[in-house]
Length: 256
Image 1: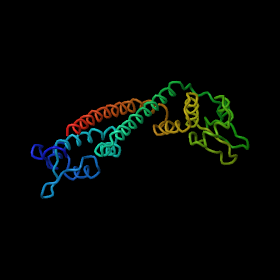
Image 2: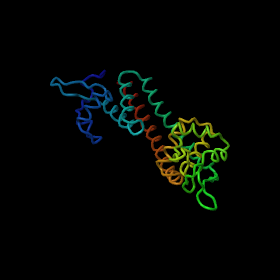
Image 3: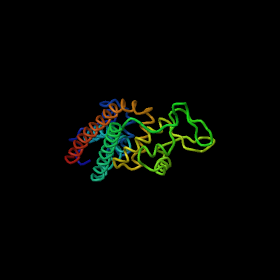
Image 4: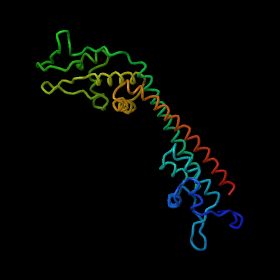
C-alpha cells in the first residue's frame, strides 16, 4: 500500500462497516467490485485496511446518491486502477445527464406556459354529435385530422408522422378508419407542436409526452413540476457532495 505497516493504522472490515452502519460482507463486496482498493492480508489471511480505505469508502458512499451504484462503482474502480481521467469522464457524464434533465424540465415548463386554450373544430355542433363520412357518430369533443391540422397550421401528414413516432395516439373509427382525436390527443398534439416550434426533435419530445400521460394531463403535470425541480436540485447537490469526497480521496491517494 506504500506506507510502512508498522506506522499505518490497520483496520478490520468491521471497523470500516461500523461507521456507516454497513455489514462486513458489504465491505468485502465493495472491495471485490473495485470500489475499494485491494486490502492487504495478515499472516492469518484476514483483510487489513488502512485510512486510505476509509477515505475510499466515504467517497464511494458519497458518490452513490448522485451517480447511482453502477456509475459510482465504475468511478471508484477507475481511480483505484490509476485511470483517473476515465473517472473524471464518468463524473462529467453524470453532470451532463443532469443538465439534459434540467433542459427537459425547462422545455416542459416553457411549453406549458406557451400553450393556448384549445380551439380546434370538434365533431360536435349545436345539434349534438356530428357524423363522420359513412354515418358513424363520434364522441363529444372528438376532432378530425383535417380541422386539427388546419388550426395548427400544419399538414395532416405531419400529424401522421407524429403518430408513427408514438407522440400521438388517436383512435380509429371502427367503420370508416378515420383518425379521431379526443381531448387528450389534442392536448398531446398541441404540446408536440409547441415543442417542435422550440426546435426540439421528435426523440427529445417523446419522454415529455410520456411525462404528461403519466401525470394524467397538463394540470397534474404542472403540479408535479415543483417536485421534479426539487429532485433535480437534490441530485445536483449530491453530485457536488460526491465530487468533494472524491477529491478528498484523491488527495489521500497522493499522500499514500
